Amino acid sequence: MSTNYAVEASGLVKRYGSTTALAGIDLEVPTGTVIAVLGPNGAGKTTGVRILTTLTDADEGQATVAGFDVRTQGNEVRRRIGLAAQDATVDPLLTGRENLVMLGELHQMRRSEAATRAAQLLGEFDLNEAADRRTSGYSGGMRRRLDLAATLVSRPDVLFLDEPTTGLDPRGRSELWTVIDTLVGHGTTVVLTTQYLEEAERLADDIVVIDHGRIIARGDARKLKREVGGDQVQVVVVEPGHLPEATRLVAEITGVEPKVDPNARSVTAATSQGVETLVLAAKAFTEAQIAVDDMSLRQPTLDEVFLTLTGSTTDDDTPQEA
Ligand SMILES: Nc1ncnc2c1ncn2[C@@H]1O[C@H](COP(=O)(O)OP(=O)(O)O)[C@@H](O)[C@H]1O
Ligand SMILES: [Mg+2]
Image (cartoon, rainbow, N blue to C red; front, side):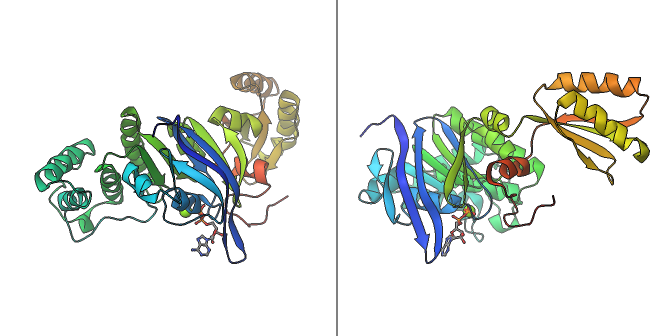
């Protein structure tokens, strides 16, 4: 069966007792694209992935993956997907190569075919050196790469990656991003979940933001950032005594009331004028003879995106300072 959408879901609802994990999710993922499902802990990301990969049934709604119904055609779906779950799935007592060969055999490959596929994937994922060591000795990044390689043994059409880089250090994260780029280059449709806007922006064609089981925003990273008020300009002054004057200047330039942090000696405000804001600020502070430690323009953080979209931070129910 062919379809223009690798994933089509409508009205997905899932309840666990009194918890509504998904409260009606619609999703369309065009074949060959990457979609990021972005949301804080407990948003419902894993629940969504579990439904689409046939590991659990939705209470309401329907979904097809690779053109097959996840509820009634589970075998067809499973044959066409790969899943890298949030918790690693490789066997720590086996070597990387043994893990991949075993998976190939589970997918009905002949042993020689499985061995060839394993060798190919170990090379692609930069695991040649570690291939014949037990995975219990692998670094977090190596284990994640092996996890990804494992999902590809069967050459899936649609790949689900549930928080692929959570727990990795920045280097491991950027290595994994490169690997995911390679997958996308092969034409695989990828559905990935993440808590990092940066990751969604780096990898995905389209981003769906979910919170408390609902979609609260969708679009590309630029659109989402526009929705949260654009860049933030921040000026750090040398003398705390200059903060009131600095606040006045930043307010004048941006047209909004800045946030002042006396401990950091900083004044921060949203701006839609990009780098022009820095040019104006540099000029104004020079003219006012206010010494500046740092002046920067930055994009909103995930926290700020969530704060704007949901009224709560990614730390879920942490109360907000006024
Ligand atoms: N098996 C389960 N039993 C009970 N509650 C669950 C179960 N799985 C998930 N939940 C609840 O559903 C909500 C969504 O969870 P989850 O899909 O794991 O979110 P995420 O992956 O975005 O962190 C959370 O409130 C979680 O506690
Ligand atoms: Mg999860």
